[in-house]
Amino acid sequence: MNFLIIGGFLGSGKTSFILELAKYMVEYRGIQKVAILENEIGEVGVDDKVLRGSGYQVKGMFSGCVCCTMAGELPINVRRLQKDYDPDWILMEATGVAFPDSIKQNLLKTLGIRAQIVCIADAQRWQKLVKPLGHLLPLQLKDADLVLLNKADLVGREELEAARESIRSINGQTSIVCASAKEGIPQRVLDQIIEKKEG
Figure: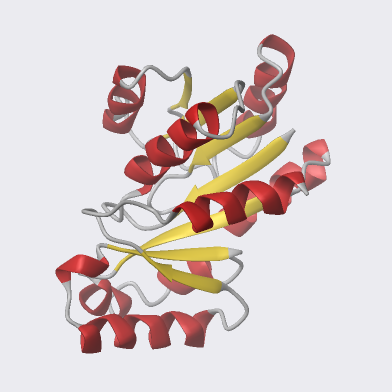
């Protein structure tokens, strides 16, 4: 089973990315068993409604942030998914304030699952967010295997390059890919994510 954690701050485009990746997996790569594990703080997950409305089976976890109070609930939900559905892939959308590496370590420690991390960064809001959230964003991005710099079509070249350099200063080992809401995620990026885990 392959496990992908999708992290990133609120409003960066995580749900849109998950929908696009899941659709590509099923329709173009022939991967039939794709499960989406969604976490949202609060009693009702707005993203959960979007995902269900797109025809995907979603397991919601609403006890709080997956990196802290839900540390024990995560392996229980993953085991349940494995038993009931036996997915080829689990795509997990972390809450906008979660630390993906904490989730990754929890999965490895409790279930022996090695997860891949993709973080979505908002190019349009990056400069506005990076200073006030200087304690949060670096911890979200520092262990990402791939950073998707989303909404690149909404900023100029200089602003986009400044965001790329800022992300490189946080995680110099990661791949940074620019994406635009108009054009969607490049197919080569979707293939890279899938083939890295399956290869």
